[in-house]
Length: 90
Image 1 (tube, rainbow, N blue to C red):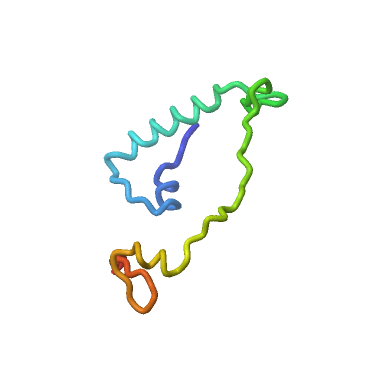
Image 2 (image 1 turned 90 degrees about the horizontal axis):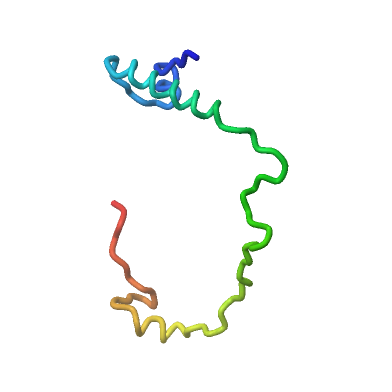
């Protein structure tokens, strides 16, 4: 199976040097051939163990809410009733 790596790189907006194209094409072909050799899944092939099903915890909202004054008393820096945090985005 021939894979046009240059076209795939263009679609993915990747820049691949010409001397590396042959290597990438060989690697892609080996990946595709490996996937073609995978066995087909039939029936309920979810991979879950029916004898030990997962049980999700019940989502219960917390009832122990802090008052605004308690929250602000624990903050390292406050201004105008709000918590001040360091700038992370320029």
